[in-house]
Image 1: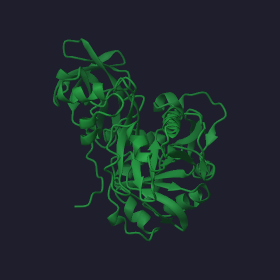
Image 2: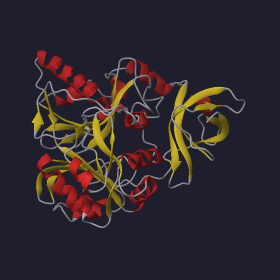
Image 3: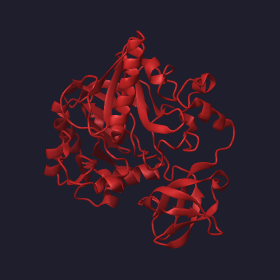
Amino acid sequence: MQRAMSLVARLGVRRPALPTALSRSLSCAQDVLRRTPLYDFHLAHGGRMVAFAGWSLPVQYGDSHVDSHLHTRRHCSLFDVSHMLQTRIFGCDRVKLMESLVVGDIAELRPNQGTLTLFTNEAGGILDDLIVTNASEGYLYVVSNAGCWDKDLALMQDKVRELQNKGSDVGLDVVDNALLALQGPTAAQVLQTGVAEDLKKLPFMTSAVMEVFGVSGCRVTRCGYTGEDGVEISVPVAGAVHVATALLQNPEVKLAGLAARDSLRLEAGLCLYGNDIDEHTTPVEGSLSWTLGKRRRATMDFPGATVIVPQLKGKVERKRVGLTCEGAPMRAHSPILCTDGTVIGTVTSGCPSPCLKKNVAMGYVPSKYGRPGTQLLVEVRRKQQMAIVSKMPFVPTNYYTLK
């Protein structure tokens, strides 16, 4: 989730980073806050702006958090995620650079196909999760978390310099576009009125550059952070308010903020970096083994491979699981206990589910307690209550794929 300026900033750019936990972020000190290109637009539409670690972002609008959440599930909502870090990696050795940092098979991506992948360290820990798209224009389009902005940018820049010093052809730009996420079952129908391209030919995790409501040079990617069908639109800053205004004219569309975004992603079983995964979590522990490319597993040429690959064949001591419970909602840091009262783990994210009318959470427990249906206890407000290990996503995902 990113901010505003124009065009592209070259190597060496530094920006303040966002913390990853929503609860921590919203309580940060009100210093001088950065603004996305839609800041005035949010105010004009009743956005309740909050300090999100150096940024001023809407947590919600006139509707309640629950109404906004349910509208996204039933219709579609527009989120401003312009604080995400967008980068462009170019040059003949761009794939070599990216594969030296992530666990995914970037070389196998078809033109305009993207994948979720992970930056890892030599200990096997996850430095961040990100989406990498093989743009047909001859570069890699990368979107990574705002909370890891400085860390991710330094990681990529350092690798660029290292490879350049060895004679490699590679470079990196920071893309200063706005980023809009239109999410929900009617998102494609709404966007189709503003583009000439047939969105039925743009399945999940594919991308294309197109004109959107008269604004040229927009990159539309079929992805999102809600579990619903939807798109993320990278828009030149000068056209951001125009595109947002055009989308909002459709009665299917309502604005949504950080609160709904967090509960939607949790229902979808999607990780929040810094809460559910971090530098001390491996992809296998985090139930993200599917991000490891088959070829990469065999070549073991990504950071932390000597730790991660053996975990695929053996057993890890702990794993990320879903939890459901009645009663008081589970929150991050709530202790997880086995039925005899022994603390065995910790909740990493939790909230009441507007769709399921019960509480959902994710957290880490020893692998032997990870089977769905296992009864455990969680401690909430110093009281123990029953919780059940549950499959994720809690709410079925509705990504658009070609049959």
